[in-house]
Length: 229
Image 1: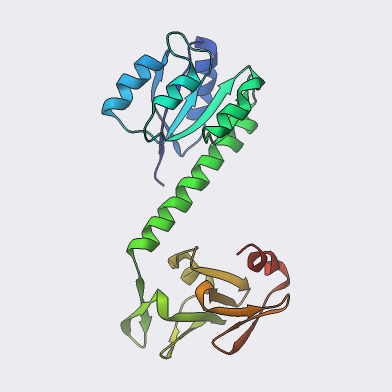
Image 2: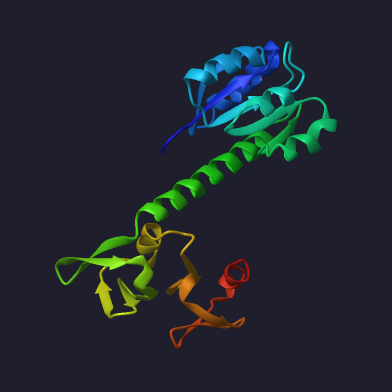
């Protein structure tokens, strides 16, 4: 699992220690530095890239919000402060979360999980932009299947049937396995036994979607997936 590189910009030693302790408890976080003012943090960022900044607002020399405005391509930012009145300005600057001191570990975890989820989605999106196909085992051969040609995938016990615009393929794997290989922005599971290509959906109701003239049922627990497309 790739770790999120983070730094702390905080002038209160106790607050910085609390953050450092919290970070050490999260497996996907890696602390790369703690800085007592934004000038020192700026010097570090000139030579190093990070994924996340824990940023206090009331800092010496340069205030947190002013520092944030100087960053041309800022990483994810979680504000940590005792002052609630800066929340609106923080979110206008696209910060991920705003933690009011003192905050418990559970609240801290909610904030960093938001950052992790956004990074994961960005990585999957980038991968899908680059990769346009996958190779599947079909009758002892590795067959190239383009994402753009897949209409839907149907579970058939320990096998799956991949229906494309050209032909059908049978491969020995589960729907969970194939789902992990597909770009989440292009394909959605709408039933325990069906994954569909979003671009191939022609129409839908609360009970079914239609793709290339074929009606696929929507599972009761998956109806919000279609509504959220």
